[in-house]
Amino acid sequence: MSDSTKQNKILEFYLGQQPDSQGRAIEDIWSWDYQKLESVHNYIQWLFPLREKSRFNSSAPILNDEIIQAFRTSEELRNRLLHSFKVMLAFYGLQCREGENAEIVNLDFGQKQIGFASL
Image 1 (cartoon, rainbow, N blue to C red):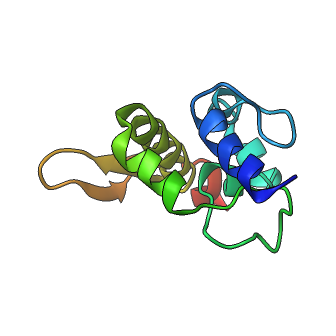
Image 2: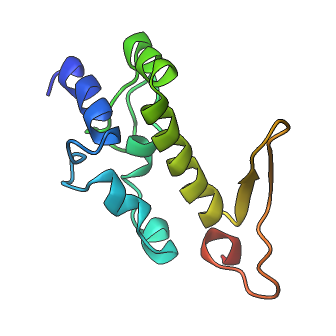
């Protein structure tokens, strides 16, 4: 698969128009329980692609300036990226308090922790 095809696939994946290289829709990944988020590792490069080729997932998309600009200019892409971020924050036992002074804080689980926070 060419780099150009992979670049288009990340936008289509994020917009819910195409699955990732394993046939998973982004909405499916968002709905996974914490056990699955912990046990499967090849989705993270699809939720948060980088500018360089992944050493761990050869089918992961690679960002370029065009893709980054698409995320910067599309409210829908930004909102969906934020949703991915919140899914992973919850997995790590964190949450984002939004507002003028947004901050990352611990989730209040009481005595029970879930996901990565309980490992």
